[in-house]
Image (cartoon, rainbow, N blue to C red; front, side, top):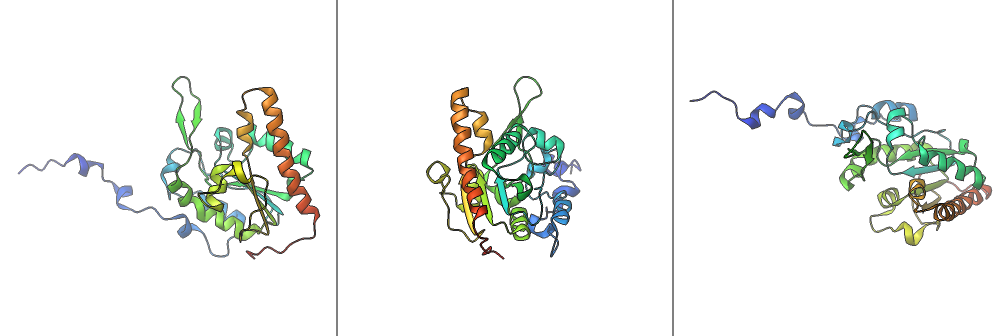
Length: 235
């Protein structure tokens, strides 16, 4: 009888025999944001850790009044290890300033903490790929933990992936953008576009109109911040 191992047996190594721990299992009890960030570096709850250069966790003060949640880090965020530092992040900063929101009041994060990408057919450019629902769900415990610590007064979903992750898969940003949504996640919850969608506008005029609409959505957030503080129902 041949002692030669099958192709399937050759593929099995120590990692294949050790099941990945879920994100929830990695979260320390009563963790701080810094402890969460450290724990998230070890997350292998989905396969995106194999693509991303590093985990890109949320950033901001634990007492931030506003939390902005995007889809996932982009190419520059993946390389730098910080959220919203690429072109979309710079546009977000401009819009926040135009809306009268102090960036120090804002905690920024993403529903997915690793960059999902594919190689361009030519050159070395890494092309953004939309995360699957299973990947978003695998990463969800980290976002839930961030919400539990920050307890934002205003929660803003940037783009469809964020909104559908937090507000339900049937939620449509195109229909509900800028409107307050009833949710136990925060006293005030609304959704708008992701700033990256503005960068993809077909021409300068369209880009200008989309930016102004985005700023108007953020001005609604600024108005909420000027109103008497409302206790976070998630507290």
